[in-house]
Length: 120
View 1 (cartoon, helix red, strand yellow):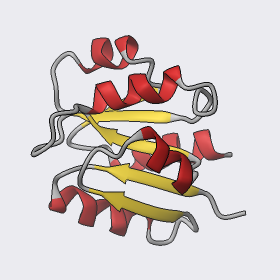
View 2 (cartoon, helix red, strand yellow; view 1 turned 135 degrees about the vertical axis):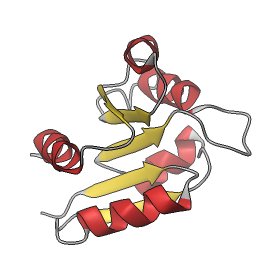
View 3 (tube, helix red, strand yellow; view 1 turned 30 degrees about the vertical axis):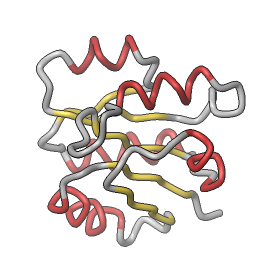
View 4 (cartoon, helix red, strand yellow; view 1 turned 120 degrees about the vertical axis):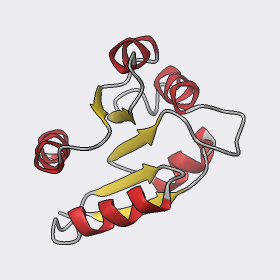
């Protein structure tokens, strides 16, 4: 069964790279360059979210969105993978209750492995 991945990142180059990486994965991809509200995310019904920590042009940071998602009982089990080049990414991910984190630049094989692990 096709799984739906919501990718929230403001960097066009990252989004294009992820399109290529996941092209043959069999997953459905939804891209957003802005932090969506939790209601909108619920409507999209993703099976996993790849979420950038810093999203330019919006007040809400990825970690804040992650905390809101994890506080909502209907989204509590939705896997959220926090992505960033921040030096303190492990701490940020722990504080916002992300399921895991991936550092940028991505290890593409590691990214595919982790995403497939969560979706299986």
